[in-house]
Image (tube, rainbow, N blue to C red; front, side, top):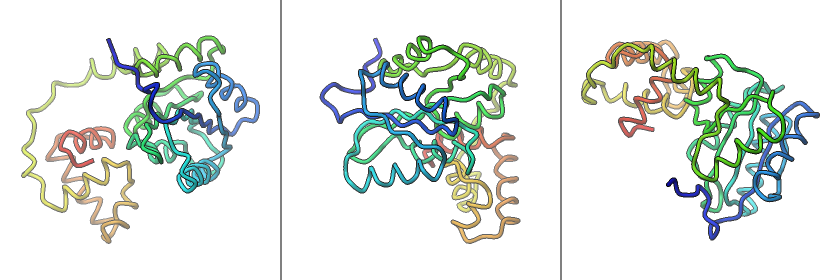
Length: 233
């Protein structure tokens, strides 16, 4: 039996809804309250507001466990940015952060980018309240909340992947390539990697090309998985 994700004796649980639709925001907040016994739920209409709320929460030390429902299409950026902030699974106060996508996008590109960024679930907003609450309650049991059509899509995606190539020893990557792979694993884009490592974007692109070739991969999601498997992210 899967152990509960949040211990009854652990830090308090709170919710966050990051959603730009003023009609969907209170509905999603109500879904969280219904699923988790009336927990306090904050709302944010975009990336900047979500960042500010999280920063304020850390500054005042309230912290604790957090369930975040995050839309992807926001007016000032992508919900992926918020997912990355929470992807290490920790919040102020030593609690666990669980970012769950709530969106209208059901295509592979959005789905796999969100999972690679650290999303713990992916729900479509075309469900009624009772179904959404049921999916969210599964989080407490440690089950990822996924809309059925997306679960099938994930299975189909991996079913049709070619057989995995034999693992490449870590020492086939140069030290700089490992640095680049580690940052890709944390969700940074090539321009951001260049800034952190103080390299030109052209140089980073060359390293990424070499990494993809050596590891026999072809996407950012696969690079993130390789980084995690190698303990780099």
